[in-house]
Length: 492
Image (cartoon, rainbow, N blue to C red):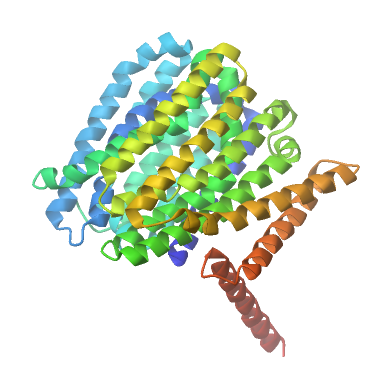
């Protein structure tokens, strides 16, 4: 799992680094309204595209011995759904102007309808990259497509100086991904409906949960886009992306590796329980450090990365970062429910989150039009929703409250110590900007890791994620020692 996570994290960070560079450049070439137009269009496009997340890939990964008929049926279902989604986006686009009140988004949506069709044509054989844990191939497959999208977007932004550069980059990235799927895997899918009932009986609930997951992530953006307009939408979208990226770009790839690994132990309850708790501890260690860390450095990192015209999003970045960090407690729950054969339960829990968030967010936005109030409400709602999910998962895999506490408390305590240290340092310093940012990052990292490992030692060095950290550090030191020895031998 750690090897696979390393590849997936490398992929996500390579893509995110590319995206960060793109955001930095585009923030200076385009306006918040340009970002807002595409962000609003992507809300509707993404809403329809979620209908293609019908879980066929998950069903193939979980299946012990899938046949060619399983692969062909999964690809056929994806193709039919993708064509229908593309047509639906094209036809519905004119109606969205009634809610978002910006005619520019209509043509953008109609152009992006092509992405759904291109995505549906991808080679189903690439599922084997995850099923067989060949994450190095998965890395290359996705990263090459991202580089092409980045190149097209930046080039056109320099030439056009408007939102069509973003649209062209999105389409080119998907086209490259589809072509590469056939170049990198020899499988050639055929039309088949032989295994529809078998695949659909499992994947329908993954599909329903995926739709819920989309709304969990986008319910705030939907409210902001309808109530405040494109400029606020652009600022909120950029703030959310900057705040969540450090957490998501580590936790999400780790969780994507977790499912195919867990699927190999679906009949071993003790191993599954151990994997779940270990992965949950990893997720929280990452979430606490990055969520609290971004909250602490937001006043310095926003003007450095985005420029002075974005400084009003600093409060949004701070609160959204804390929400992202706390949200890592949900990260592994749905995967273990799928492995245990409870996708229906996972779907119900996901839609409970949608209803609670919508009930909290929509009245807040429409009554106050205050984005800071919105992000604070979202944080509170996220915290309230976590205990029921952990309780349900705990009952299914025999995890007690004591097990959860043992997995959580050290990361929370280390995050608290880091916050106290960095805030105290900032009170003592007489300057801000890049110099303070660099100092905060170094001091915060030392405080967090030092406290985490000290508490782990005090706890008797249990077999938890902290031991993995020590192992990885030792491996890294050993590699550096080997490199140093080779350099010295070459010099001599």
